[in-house]
Length: 414
Image (cartoon, rainbow, N blue to C red; front, side, top):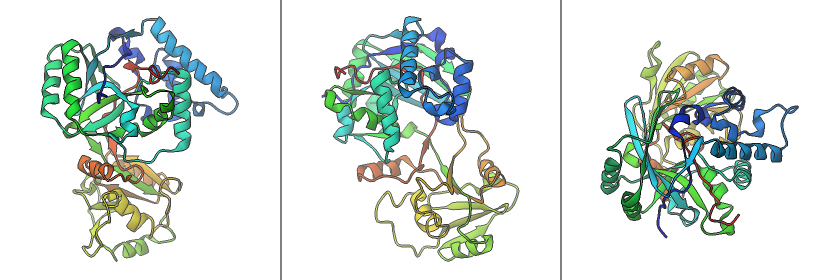
């Protein structure tokens, strides 16, 4: 079976893209999503409503909510907001702040996920899988492509160069400054890209673990269940850091915490007044903001090498050597004393490490800044069949809901 398949679905009508394409879903709270959807009745958020957007007094029954989402999907098509396309693939270009990445939008068999050719590096939560599986079953539509990275391939790059020589079918700059351009690739050029991806040994999930897992639940309904994906060459992907904030120091004073930290790390106080100077400069280096002051720290050199690639990720080292033993947070997934702040990027603010200082002023006791995880580290973890700590990567920019509509169960007979 081919690695990728021509996309069969709908593309937003160019004249409606500005009204339909949704804000970045992960950057909004449930209340913000609800307010935006209510104010913009054409926006695709109206087909993605969730129960947590409502108060307990006005929350609709889940079945009724899913039927409402499905009605919006049908209305988009009936009103011409989306247009059916002949089977093809697309090139999707995202650009912001001088960064540019191009990916191929296509379908992939869920079998590629089940047999490990699509490689994962994160655990998924059953409750989130349940919600997405119910959505897929009732609404029968996916709009945000699962983002995958693959090792850069010169032949695929040349084919994307050819495909993007003309004007894009869709061109939209969203409110966060990200430029989205989509080219339709049809005929023989579609076949050439499908053939070129046959030489790609593996693709790595960069965003969409839960969507993959939820779709995989329907695999018993037919081997043809497919994912909507966008495949980006690894050299073009941009990864931002995911920082940590803690509510307390596990019973330590600032002085005793820094003293304990200095037992296994080289600790250096940093000058005041320039939070961006506190950005970790390389892998293995961290900074902490506590009591209005930044300190840089790095392993002292006497540490035992981590046993595997997942344990060598900076987020894992910080958890295993600082947040766990010194602060007493042993469950980074569920302990409410630990929070996460993504590095600045499209849709998530431009404050840099100033956002961590603000978090401390607003009630967090200390903030830890990390260097971004690299794509090479992600690949090493996934190839080893391991998983990263939670919130180890933030890929930016991200695809948006509202450009595509795709039925994941179209070939399942479901």
